[in-house]
Length: 502
Image 1 (cartoon, helix red, strand yellow):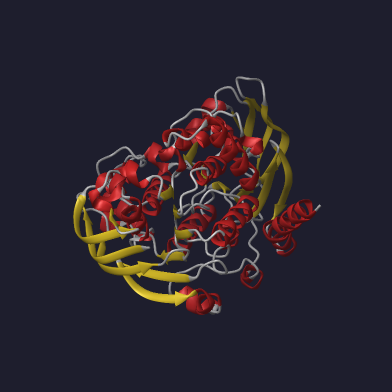
Image 2 (cartoon, rainbow, N blue to C red; image 1 turned 120 degrees about the vertical axis):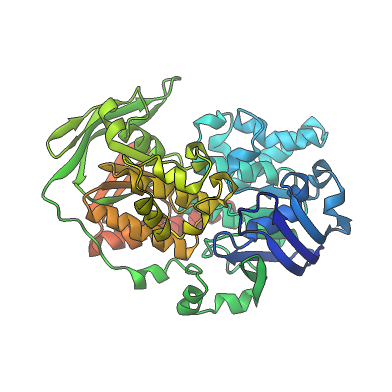
């Protein structure tokens, strides 16, 4: 059992809005509880109190008590909680200790001092259940963001704790991996495990959750039974700033958006291999209209992020060129004409304040324009706050604000909606539409069909390092895109169930 008794918490930095105020809550053994609400509402802070990261790692003022199985979490070291509570963080890189995937899966079990045979059994079982076998014996550094998230889930599952705490575990997963994650969560629930999960993506969870807790400004505002939450109308969800509960709903919301520019951005002979010789990217020729907002979709590990890095010139050993408006841009020229918002935005936040972070992307320091950009992304109130003290979703929007300020001809976004709620996803979409309308060419690596329908005009599907599909997001294109996100995962799940029966 997990008990919060009159719990309040304020981060020592004072810059966050994601502290907690007067939380009283009991989570029963075997209960599946979903925390939802806008970015910075306190969901992540709640999870950190359960697993002991607060106050052992994140400092601040804590009032009240958090009890897990009768243990006051604030009074015991983190390693004593590891065998009770397993945690999957929003950024999987923050919990890796090994350079290879198999070693990472075994690491926690080794720290518990388990026998070698038992460790091997757990790693084998976990790999089979999560579909991790293709990722075994690989370098952590060679994995895509989504693949890293799957390894993080596997390393926790191998510990076999009876409480699982997860902070947006689906944020970088493709629809196929999300289906695998859902199956794993259903398995844990059937085993009687306690599952506490903070999420913005709700479609894969609403039928699993026994209880849904909606938060605002660090407080619990509403509670729903799983059944009542699943029955909520789309309009009621939107009033709360929550996303759709079924991807089928997107068919009702879809409105085609296309770019009819007569000039094209083309790229040719993109070829990239890892130092070990394995081929990652092989694109002979492709083109999209100049000023298009192109969603780059595909499986985790298909080569989407590598394509994005090659496109903007970050991979020096990538062959190939980009031609835009008759001008050929080689690797060094692409560096000057492109801006990239990385999947892990912690790599590109450098300054002491949010405002300064935006100003360094501008050719001339125009504070009024920078503040206007921040206001458009609901960040103006944080302009004097250190970027690293913000929540994950807020950091993501700071990096996007810098991209908007850069005014580069080509802007690449790698998973820009990771950690974003409905309201802020719409704000990002509005800013991207504005960039596209001004003539900027956008390439958006994403697993988010709701976001694609909000701002994109074209689709490029990358599979096994090649472009499998390239089409406009007109009426036919919308149906093809939704078919990829809706129908293909079902077919995969049905195939796996049949294999198990056989």
